[in-house]
Structure formats: C-alpha cells, structure tokens
Length: 313
Image 1 (cartoon, rainbow, N blue to C red):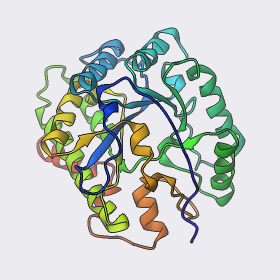
Image 2: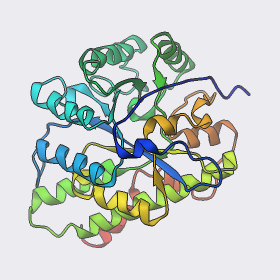
Image 3: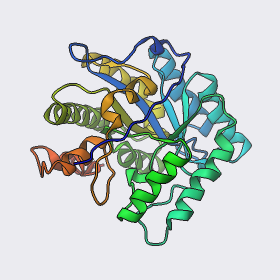
Image 4: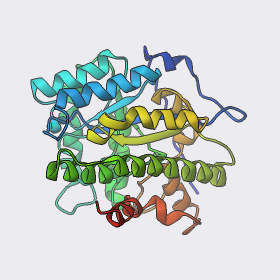
C-alpha cells in the first residue's frame, strides 16, 4: 500500500525552543503548538481582539514555546487591524501558514476544487508579506477531499505550488469548549467558568495521552506530535495553563518545523477521503478499525460538554 511521499521544510525560529531539535526514541515526548483560524477580529467577552492575541503571545513567550499561526485571512488579516495581529506573531518568531481565505469545506458539494485552490492563492497574497511565512497549508476542517478527484487534485496542486501539507497528529476540540465558554460569558460576564477551565485542561490531556498511545500502536515509538488549537478566547485565557500541564506531564516543546521533520509526516495515507488527525487517517488506511478509545477522539468534545451540562453549564 502506498503510504508516503517526501516533503522537506526549513525554517529558523528566534524562539528559545528553536534550540530543541527533533527528539527520537529515548527522549521525552515532544509536541509542537499550532493555532488555526487566526487572527480573529471578532468581539468576545472579557478580552478585545488585541488583548486575546497578546495574551496568547505572552503565554508562549513565558514558556519559550515557538508555535505556528495558520491564517484564515477573512477572519481579520485582510484588514489593517487584523494584519497587525498576524504580524505580531511573525515578529515574535512564530511561523505563519496558510489556512485559506474564508475557511470553506472541501467536502461540500457547493465548493469546487478550483474554488478551494483559489482560496489558498488569495490567502497567500496577504500572508506572503509576513517574515514568518512558510509554504505550509493546513486543510480546513482537516478534510482533504471527499472524493478521489478532490483529494488527488489537491495533492497535485500542493506539489505544483511547493506547499507541504501541515499535518496535525494531536487534534483537539478546543473550539467546542470555546463556544461553551463564550456563550456562558455572554449570558453572564461574571459567571464562574472554572469548571470549563478544568474540562478544557482534562480534554487536552486526554487527547494527548490517547494520541501518544496511538502513535505507539501505529509507529512503535513516540512521534513528534503536532497539536491543533485555535486562535480564540479559551486559549487567550488558559494557554499558559495548557503549556504548564504539558510540562507537568513530562512533555517538551519543539518548533513546528522540527516536528514536521519527523519521518511520520512524510506519509500520505491512501484512502478515499483522507483527513482528520494524521494518526487517525493512518489507522483507517491500515484497517485498524474502531480501536479502544476511538470514540473519544472523534466526539468533538461531546463528553466534556455533557459533563458541563450535568454541572448546570
């Protein structure tokens, strides 16, 4: 079964964690942080767009973590105020990747392959002017095409334009808990949201441990994990706690470039509708089926949301 094609990427980050290279077997589990859909100019409770952006950058800086921001340009970067927020990431030494112009769904019948590809080119017209820009594309919704024609058409497009697929191995549903957080605060700005914080940290830990176990099942080792989160309020408030939790778990941080140089990210699972976490896609390609704990990796935070409902939130 054909499982891979080769990609290479080079990027020098000024963050302190750039000194950490890819750790192979015998080293601590490593993780690279990546954030999608930014920068967001929408108004939220508690913090302004500028405050949210700075809070995330401050948390990363405090811990010396070098991350990547995958820009959905119509969320703000196509406006001066939003472009300035994206530039702040670049100025801090973080990588900038492409996450389309308006975040369309490649699996939608209303979105043609040509339209989807144009979204990428349009976003590039904005973000290529940022110093941290990399020719990395992160699929929207992590969906790589629901037909062989879309899947193969996109793979050819990325290769033709020298993009690499910025895979995710450790997928989180932070966006779902962020929706709950903002809804609660809009209803009552003084609400006690500590249960949501606890649920979020537990969610991230559960996903991290489950995907680490899956990497051992599929690869027989700790891979360099690439984690997906989003540019949103929940991370503006609690990213510092997320990073500290990983430290307490014994994990260490590497740059997205170093993580993507792990050989696992050269793989290209061949199935009719590739996507999701790379590890989940590999599991399906290899016929692993519904392994133990599978349902907690695809429930989009249903477990945590139901638990919060039981607590009255």
